[in-house]
Length: 135
Image (cartoon, rainbow, N blue to C red; front, side, top):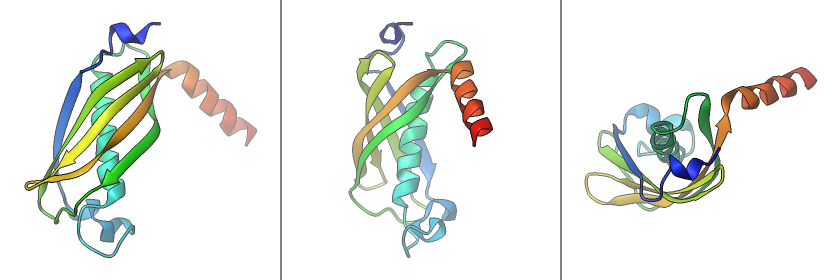
C-alpha cells in the first residue's frame, strides 16, 4: 500500500494537556521537581503524532514510534497548560517523519523530530505473539 496518498507532507495535529502531578518529574522519578517531566512531554508528542496518522490510515493499520529526537528547552510548572503540535515532514514508504513542538503558557518548551512506522495490525500482532511463545 502507498501511504503517501493518505499521509501528506504538511498535515498537522495539535493537542493540549494540563501538567498534573502524574506528568511531573517528581512523580515519574526522572527528577526531583514538580515540573513537566521530559518523558511525559515526549509521550504527548508521540500521542499527538499517533493521532495525526490514525485520522487517515485505513482500517487494519496503525503506526508505532520508531525514533524520538527531542530537546526539552524550558521547565513548565505543575498546573500549567501545554500545547503539543505534530506536522508531517516526510513520507518514505511506511516510514513517516514528523516535526514535534511543545509550548506552555509562556514559551516553547520542547522541539524535535519523531519517526513513526505504519504497521498492518494483524501482521504486527502475529509477530508479537510469536515472540511471546518463543520466550
